[in-house]
Length: 162
Image (tube, rainbow, N blue to C red; front, side, top):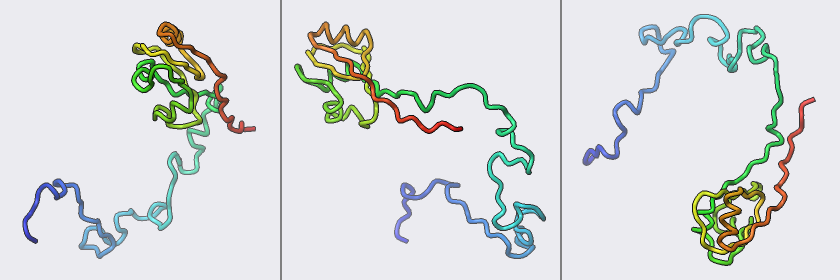
């Protein structure tokens, strides 16, 4: 080995020595190899899942399920600010799903789009998105642009439990 380079070596305590078990009683990890004497976890393949309570009815099943979850029906929106439109779009351009995707402001096609009024806008833009806040609409129209709100995409409802 030529020169020792501390920059390329792992920090102290990062690499631990592998624990070798079942190599005689004098090794300190002989006979039962650190697994105790009897029971499920001393056997090979003996595993207990998270929340297992030894056969007793687990807590998560003892508690009653109350209430309603709107999760399968919730609508998610990609939020854009007026300042984002000001930075990415030129005067007279149309802001819609296709143009937002082309400019890299939209990660997925499945999401709904909402424009919020944070920032200032000076460019005349035609905005066609799923939702627009009141302040954003005022700012866009004040700059000479137009706003059209389309019907948002419906989420794919997950099958309800019977």
